[in-house]
Image (cartoon, rainbow, N blue to C red):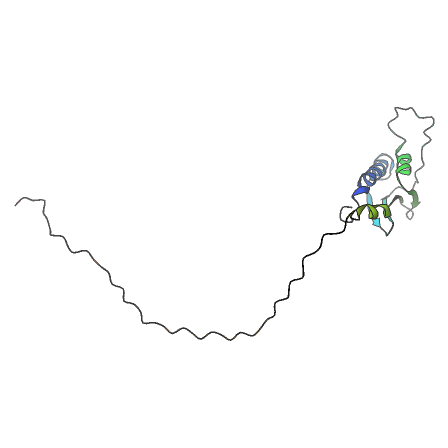
Length: 161
C-alpha cells in the first residue's frame, strides 16, 4: 500500500484484513487456506479474502452479547470502518468477503501544501565527436642504467700478523 502512497489507509485495511482472516481461521471448512487481494481503482481500494468454504458470513446480533465477549464483532467492525462490504459465492466451493475504503481522500491528503521545489535546470546532453588517434610518441633513446658500487674496502684478517 505504501507503493500506491496509501499510507493513511494502512491501519484500517490492516484491521479489516485481520478480522476477515480471523473469520477464515475460526469458521472456514474444509481447510484454512485463503487468498488476500488488494485492488486499487481511481477512487477506492478494495480488499478481498477468498476461502474454500461456500457458507456466507452473517453479521452477529450484538444486542444480546456481553460487553466482555471476545467474538462476534468482527464483521460489525469491518462494516463500521469501511465504505462498503459484502460477501459473494465463488463457484461451488468457496466465497469472497470484501470491503472498500475510499482512496480519493488519500489523494487530496497527499498533495503538497506548498508549491513543489524547483527542479534543476536540465543539463546539456554531451555530443559525441569523432576523435582522431594521437600520433605514437617517438621513443627516446634508452638511458643506460649505471650501478654505482662503493669502493672496495681493504681486506682484513682476524689472524694477527
